[in-house]
Amino acid sequence: MSISELLATTSETPLEDSFSAQVQKCTEKETKGGKPYLEWDLADATGVITLKIWNNHPQFHSAAETVPETLIQLSGQWTQNKYGVDGKGWKFRVLTDEEQKEFLAGDTTTREKQNSDWAVVVAFLSQIDDPRLKALCDEFVRQFEDRFRRTAAARKNHHARRGGLVEHVAQMMRSANAICGVYPDLN
Image (cartoon, rainbow, N blue to C red; front, side, top):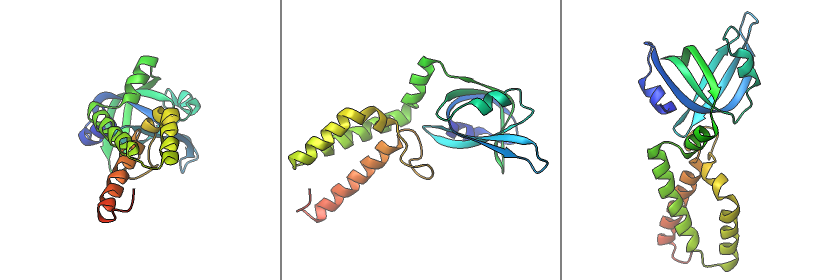
């Protein structure tokens, strides 16, 4: 299950399922009564959620030690209300190496879109006339393709997910190409 599927299918009725996510941020907070709790910002290629981890959770201390960028699987009963997603009886574990590779590849729909967008980026780069700029872009792609393809374009709003930078750049290149149709002297 993806985060977007979790958001679309949960309600106040518990849903038993598991999902994988990257811990983007772990924030230590206190309740009004002075008890500690954590907030995890979790992301996958489809979305972002914030999950509260109360101090009586069996894995509270493990959660507090989990560093940002850790890839995990969460299993339990999930509900959603006006405050967001909440879990009951849930547990987490770090993904295996094979699971991490699969997670980083994204879900099928997103992966296909991002592969298509990457092809657009490469096609536009191949059309650059200035040899110095073309060489610079080619070297950038050679050195940073993997990281570029899995980086989010923003922390919030559109494209704020793994691989969102490719989607954003392809969209901006399409926009620039449309402007070039009106201003033919541009390349």
